[in-house]
Length: 259
Ligand code: AMP
Image (spheres, rainbow, N blue to C red):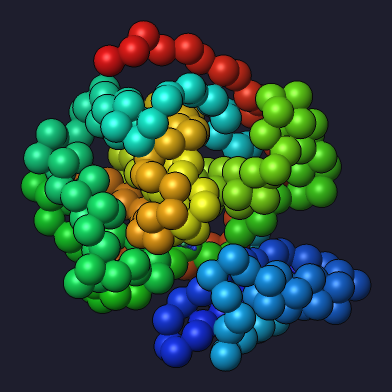
């Protein structure tokens, strides 16, 4: 199996990235699909596209996805209140949660988006070695059969325009939650038109929140809340251990009392 990864930049700024795990016969179509994707991103045309193809030398971990849980909120204020509540339920200190939200609102790389994620310890301390790059979760994908099941559930929920966002984020969040030491993840997109994000954890699943920022806001990011980790091992596993989501755990919608 091969890991095929794409990243696109303009003026040295990250525009988009995506990746797949494929068999030899899938390499060329995947490379051209990823090139197409790099060229058609809403953030504009890149001046640099890197696509790498690499044989995977370590065994692939096969896992079941986190359950996909849909919530309904009216706006970003309600969305953030919900995210805060979920993170508190998971036992995170309020200080950490507020710091994480503020960082994503202001731009965690000196006012800009990071390329990867923040790792945050229980005292609200940032552990990632490079505050601009962050850590990049990599070498992950979903099997064809599982993506068909997921697509069906997303169609039934009326969310098909967001299929790619949800599928890729669910795979990433499933990998993040599977690594020892992760308590939870908070994410919202940096695509200006996509206001949704999620709180993901082994305990509560992948909880999609449709509004975590205002439409048009170009800021976004990811925070991995961790406890008791060996930082080098943690980063190594996130970046290198290949993982395939081969079973979909199902979708459910929950309605919440307004805060
Ligand atoms: P996206 O959901 O693609 O809009 O990404 C939102 C933010 O998540 C980006 O601004 C990055 O900071 C972070 N991010 C994107 N891809 C990854 C990844 N593979 N690993 C870790 N963080 C990522």
